[in-house]
Image (tube, rainbow, N blue to C red; front, side):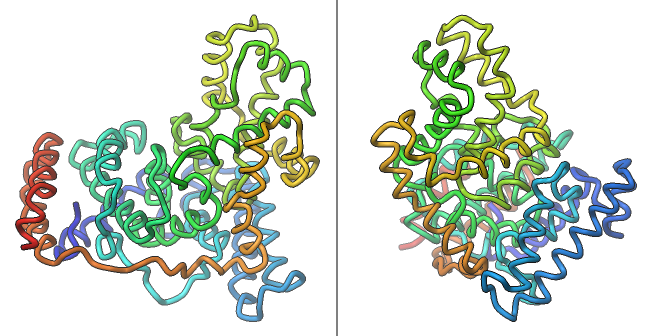
Length: 420
């Protein structure tokens, strides 16, 4: 891990993260013109980039005047949210670095957010976090060396430790590290951590419960939409005893687990960040509906349908899917949809009590409400941190995954001794 007492490692991590974001996304230091030109973007992309910048500027300039329903800041934010739904979303990496904070009520200021290693803390889920992180960063970024992969894993571990250790109400789930990884790769460690904390208090709050009951209830909304829009397909899936659980990884990771291209993933994030916490479920339903003919052609066989459904995100046209999901959302609002007979009684109860939906109501009234969420900012035991700093250098030199795993065991088992 990048230790709080090892500024050289921390500075390297920030520089490596910035360099990696440039390599991944093609974002040049000269701004949008460079990145858009390098990616072969169209005249429409340049025009949209200007609209995005104007909307972000308008939010920042009018935010101090307040966030009333008819305020200039709220109108500008709604404009930026609409741009996220349109084809290509926020278009480029640099525009996401600028737009994502605004979407989450983090208005740019001169104050630098803390580095994850400065606020990382111990928590109950460290073992599972380590298991998942050790399997991460294989699909993206593309073409990185093992040393860089190890560095990214250290960074995301501190990222997760800062969030989970800072708020005991947040419970780790498998896939949470993937959402955090996308935020870190796109916005850097400092800003990415700040944005992830907002997500945890609002958009993905239901996923961080002690059990997955609330998250599974989200998937039931898919069948509620199918029951209304494509009853024949809904009946076909029910006949095969296909539960809505097939989409759980789509929702829990905002499709990060099921799509290989980071450029596609961040486009999905544009839409999810700009929308209601249930919107990933509407995207999921739109993906299934787009393949109605193919699914109905299959027999009502659980294994065949399950395999076909799991593969759908890999070939989805997400611009079209998001547009269709947006139409579904405005046609069937969550408050009406949860009354559907296609949702179980337990599912209706959980959806009606959704912490994410409640938080989003507060967020809608004042988008800055979670920007300064009062998570604890407590440093790990300083004696242990010093030991981590010394071992961190050895781990960097060795850079092997096995060596780092062994060092982590030494740290965990020896922590009580060093603390004493």
